[in-house]
Length: 635
Image (cartoon, rainbow, N blue to C red; front, side, top):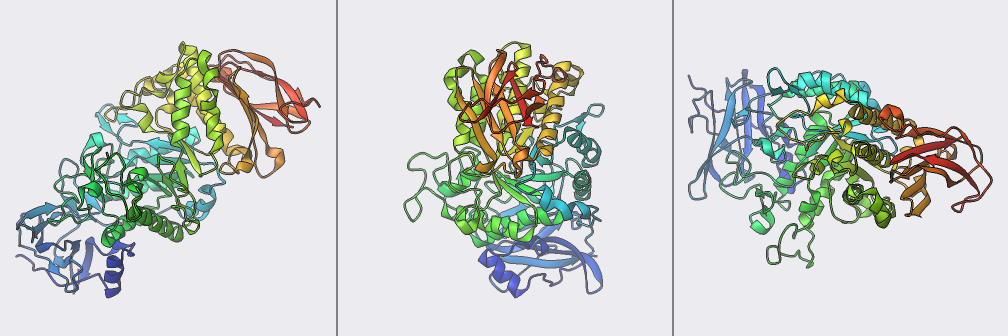
């Protein structure tokens, strides 16, 4: 016997006023499908925002997907919210909303924007679920603010869960449960402090890599249940590793079951295609000026931090949000009210987002993937900034990879490309990214870009990573970088793990493990990584030898490290470097070590002479290995 929809609401008048003001940041507690008991009956409460609808009903496997069997009630307060309690519906039930629009009498079938679980693509129904789970990471969360602070080492391993490692016998990706063992132990072995997942929110189309979302509140069902994803989070936290999620508030796909044209109107997307349609990605852009949409998006960011204990959000494609003319020709965009190209609604949305995140969650970070020179991206909102904790340093990535592509014989003429980043590196809290975007679409793998014979290519790659880890800023490497992949990344196949049978690839992995250890253990490399006080040139102008030398400094002057990079295959013996004090020079890292498949040129402890060089009162003569980085400390 069919059970009638009962009148019930989780919304107070205050909830409604916050929602309409764009200030309700916990909407997931109200909207969606909530398993509960009402008047002694167990069932599910449903709530959806569809202001242009003249009727909304819940269709699902519990009513044979028939429209009108379970019609929701529209609220009386003009909020556009439809809601109701359906007795007898249980966890695991599949459902959608059937929306009958006032606009041309259209009928639409939509997945629940707040669904906690979705069907495995290509199926598109939402699934009634709960978030019941007993967390075991209290100890980790109590120390998170120290591990996640800007003065701590921040070394990120970026992962696409579907292609990191496959179960070859069954030709499938690993599950969340399998990754809780295999991926966690691997990241810990490498010594990364954080892992970053490319989007794990439900997405319909594998080639989008997850950047075209339809299930904003649901971890993808490709790898397991929400609780199994929580187990993965718990396992990382038990290992002392923070988890960053890629988050995509910049655009969404036009899939029929998704957010586009949700109730027969431009509900979530901006109605003006100059602001609401993305020509590059053929996707829709959120209407950042609509208060209810702002509430939806900020609630979504808060949800992952709150319910899944996430430690950071890397916000995708921020530049595309900030500029009205992003990827548009003249005439395809309209200036803002001041005649400028900035999207003022998006800017205020980003500030509200970061203000709420940092107010509500201790020890988390938001990280902007922002590719322009927009000012103060990682400066506090109170000072006029956008409020992010960090920003990806796209200029460093571009200049550095261009430089490394060049035959070393020509590098002397492009010396500025490798030293230029230091002129602006402290204008933001920068993360140095060598991300998935750099190993696709014909760009080649990182190893594939390196010039020279086999030995030189691997030496160049070791040099690149060593320069990166001694450069100020946080670090990010995409999976496969640590084994020296020959091929570009392919989202459909596993990484080439068989390469680790060979010495050069083993050397790259050992090198990165040791670089992570160096970065974590030496205060000079992280304590002042975002401050000009943490860096000092020894010599940036030796273009003839293609050598850079610099000091990295922590809070204690005795912790200072001397870094020297040789970007040519020529061995440089008796090379003079100026030093800040007397004592002995001890080598603490050398990228040319034989254990990394290098040539093995080393420096024994050297006495520092009272001979001035590079504007300093002391100096020493060192040997710099070919295509190598050497790091010293003063004893």
